[in-house]
Amino acid sequence: IHFYKRDLILALLWHDTMRMNHSQPVVDLSSIAAAFPDLTSEERQLLLDIRRRKAELLVEISQLKDEITDISTEIDAMDTEEGAKQKNLAMGKKKFNMDPKKGIEFLILQNLVKETPEDVAQFLYKEEGLNKTAIGDYLGEKNDFNEAVLKAFVELHDFTDLILVQALRQFLWSFRLPGEAQKIDRMMETFASRYCQLNPDIFTNTDTCYVLSFAIIMLNTSLHNPSVKDKPSPEQFITMNRGINDGENLPRELLISLYDSIKTEPFKIPEDDGNDLMHTFFNPDKEGWLWKQGGRYKSWKRRWFILNDNCLYYFEFTTDKEPRGIIPLENIKIREVADRSKQHCFELFCSGNEVIKACKTDSEGKVVEGKHTVYRMSASTEEEKDDWIKCIHSLFQAKY
Image (cartoon, rainbow, N blue to C red; front, side, top):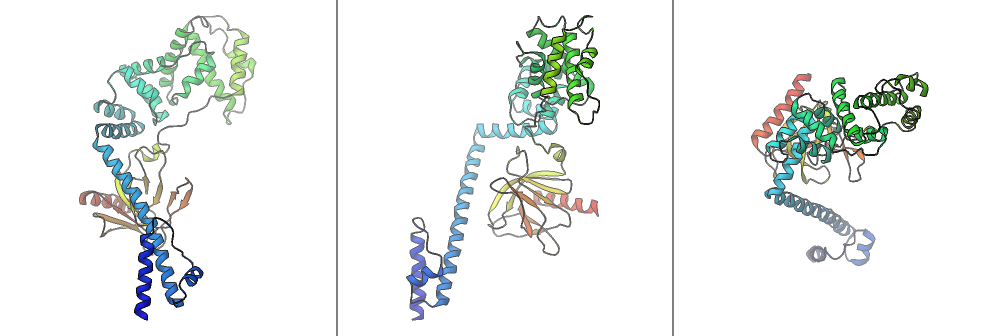
């Protein structure tokens, strides 16, 4: 009878497996008891546990199939010329966001951007994922090529029939003004020249447009910066701009309209399309691809890791704005480890086997606490693994 019941359980499991793609097996004791009254309570519990475990395995298998499909797609794309181009473009944009000059040099070297002011300007004006602060820094550099790029960049804007405030809003949305006065000066001179070229009947000369543009930017700061206590009045704004129109005064109605426009709606500072944590990741201690093992499901996912500021950040892609997870290295140790499915592995762990105080974003984009007692990673080579361990060790030694 014992062997009969054992064979019956195995037969039931085989039957479940055969229909796993058609229906879900029953996974509660009452249903099992009703369907199989000859089984003892222990055998019913055993069957329930096996079925539940099988359901978990099916979920893991499904996830693995999806990951294999994604990875195969990535590999196929990288094998093509277009895939290699997109990979280099993503790398070039990341380099630009961290160091504009080196980023442009890389893009030119990879034949993704022509070495002409017009082509570089088109790239800065139209390409998504570029850091607006980096664009401003590059455009403001004082050398012949950068100044030519700035001129070409400004010429991509159409200010025809726009009042000056509207033109400034459009212009200042395409990048972030740098902090250096000389850079701002060159930018505003180029802007004023372009505005007067497209609207020749508004100002007597470009100097008037240039001075008034500066005055509008200063007015915006004075009216909307909380640290400025004494807000200028319309009359003060008019007085400040007397005689700037080739020795003559600008129409009072024009200045009042400019004042009201800025008071009602301040200039919007563009959000960076590049990595918002750019300064955190500038000149990292180490960065590169690693395979990371999951916590609940022990599947492996390829992630871009950045080691900096005593933290390990990981991203799904190198161009992501924000990390998928952050692992603080406070009170963390590192060790080499062998794994049956991956080579060149190492682990981060706490000495007391506590949960590591890390965080990540879930599938809905919410930030949640990690539940890892260890983080296991796999490098592509033995040398790469040793280098990661050495870099993380050096942080510990520098701190302690």
